[in-house]
Length: 435
Image (cartoon, helix red, strand yellow):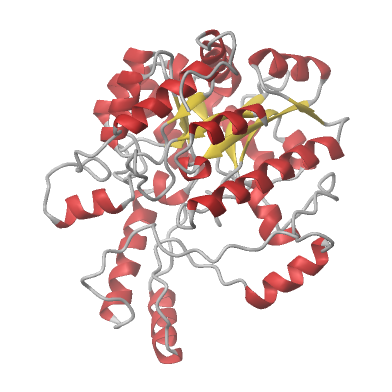
């Protein structure tokens, strides 16, 4: 394989380590300077993979009450701050493009924060502003559920449109997009200099935001519908608007998004659950469902204490599964179906197919990467953890991508969007014209 020498630093748009630390470590940020096999991400493997800047996702479930989501988001941001402070020789806090350049020049990894879903602001521009002051530099407008002011690609509005037989591709059937309130959120984000992230939203919301934003936007972890028609992927119409607005599409590694075989297996498994009498055939299968969130430590409670509590009380769900009680007999029948129908494995080549389709559609200056490490259980072969980024760059080099192309993909394009957001901000971000 061709070797990009010296190593090309990666600015990754989306990593869910903070929530993985909540679930698997009770928010303990120690020992991340060692290889942690239970995670996709640690500082040793980030170095191996050439990660030079990381947007940590302050994700919380969109199915919990929004007031709870605000508290949980603050806990996520606190985890990033503590993580960054715990390893000052490796991580450097960053809020601006210049901060990223400074960290890269110092040989450290720039540590950035993004919010994943407008549930984190509970319909409040005041909360949005305070999240910005705490360091959040992008916000994904929705997660998997619709909000009062924006529509998700996997939410109720799109599910209803599909059930009604509305024509269109997945995530692009509903005419519900941004409301007047949603446009106000976009305007305030522009005023603050906060990047608008359009991953997770439906096509109508994407088009509304691309039309309303005064600066380029970012899709932090999506892929291309023409390669795999998953609702979380971007349609041709949106790709045209990404090019026209000089926005950037961050290609992700989530197997269901990049592999049509994996996507079809998930659909087949959902049908098998119906055929086996586990799920109601009249209830839509979707990514939105109740989520039993792991608790964070209470005052005076240690990380070990909260881990023990969560082990006793926390029950998670596989994405796409409903929360119905499954009898032992039905579970055995489902296990037999799974044994007879093994889940396909996505590969690095699937990711490359999306990268090259996106490059063809929007140009080399408008693509990036957002691996979604520690936000999905399984990664494609060849991209199993954060140490594999340089393998991806070498594979692209073997396919004729120049070093300048790889540098644009890896870092430069996102830095351009960051600078555009900063340059478009109001000089006095505290002088808020709206409440």
